[in-house]
Amino acid sequence: MILNLEWLRTFKAIYEHETLTGAAQALYISQPGVSLHLNSLEAYTGYKLFDRSAKKMVPTERGKVLYNFVLEPISKLETAEQLFHKSTKADRPTISIGLCFETFQFTLEKYISSLPFNVIIKFGHHPQTTQDLDKGVLDLIITPYKEEYKNLEFKAFSKEKIVLVCGSKTNVKGLASLLEKKKMPEAEALLKEQLWYSTAADMDHLKRFWQMNFKHNIDFKPNYIVPNISSIVRCLSGNHGFSVIPDFLCREEISSGKLKLVWEGSPCIENTLYFGTRKKTMYEKEISKVKEIFEEQMV
Image (cartoon, one colour):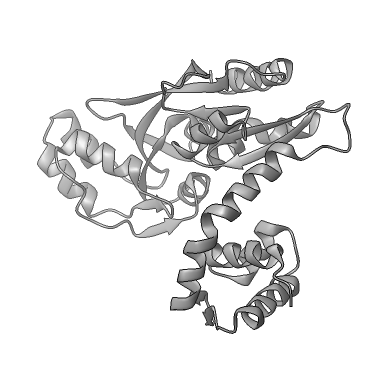
């Protein structure tokens, strides 16, 4: 039996996504195909690589060892695949853009079908997107960080405020009075009694906001952990509860009365957003078009 590299790619996807379904979606193949690859790899190695449960695939010790061996070479092969893949439509250029899911959904998603060139969207955060830009895997990134790379340049185009918001049914009179009188310990105690929403990936905005305004680390857990900030906005709209999120992601909901802007903080946390590009690119025209969309949407 000859080792098929696709088995290893599938193994890596199962390990990272923890389910056969997640691996299938990431690889754009069927779930039976994922199972077949895994069964073939286990037959080749002679070892069980995962313990199967109802909720997720748990790697065995042999599986962990194999993952550590194949991670770097498979990742390099995937990078090479992106760099050297030749499009079947040579007359239609393709650009790759790295940004977070919420920024894509708020700005670029509704314009994708109208763009006269191909677009590959890669969701990710600093520093991975910056590294991918430097390697040539990405052509444009949206980032709150300005880095010093020899072949890269960063241009500021917008700002975001990290603000405290709540659902429209939330009573904030008592909190507003405490904040106005700068009774921070009392305001903090009241906030800790409320319902809180955060994201599954991290709580960076909430942690930073709490540290800046209450001068110590957050010491409670949010009640509801949801996939992303867009989910937070939808869950809070017209309901009860609090969250700390970038202001541009909830402007429409605040304007329509579905959310309330409770507090911008003191001091206000403000991030500058940058376009990151390589200094030399053959896709200047296409990148400029995408930049225009972001500048219009994030005024």
